[in-house]
Length: 269
Image (cartoon, rainbow, N blue to C red; front, side, top):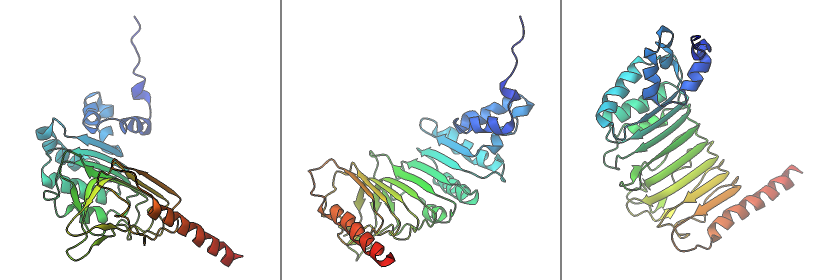
């Protein structure tokens, strides 16, 4: 019988690496045993995907070795990681690596509670000026992650947070975390709460156009500040598990946009 030809290995490196971007990173590394041609292809993938669920001991050793051996000149486009039982230094190492290698899209699901999150994690994330999309949070079965009072992501366009707590400070009743995200266009909040005495949520952002609040059991329109400054808000999607709300505050935001838009048009004419 005619021997089957290895058509896969005939493909250009760029095509093979593109295919590998859709694989779990552990499986990507395994391709190095296929032939000499594959020895170093894994070092140049631009999408990394780790999940330590059920493999904690392995990933605590695998991740540092992988990051140390990956080609340092290759940018990191996407990083998707599920952190279950990771050692805290590994989470810090990943955040630092993402910042140093120009990560654009980052998705992290962690089981660390707000006391266990490494203190250097958020400053490292804030230093990642290439980041345009961030999905971050912890499983609903875990305590929520405590976030800083202000999130400073100057290049972030899409932000999805789930099961988090916003810190309003000791003497501040109002939480206003997004005003420093200067180009943010889409914000999704999926389950949140407040720290200390904070009881009002103020969303101030000069570029936000889409706001989604989902599955927040304790949510009520009393929490939303009527002074929210959202001049370009076009779409609001609120889906909650508690009693129905009147949406009066949300309607006020949209009316404010319409009135402001009319004034701007009158000014231009």
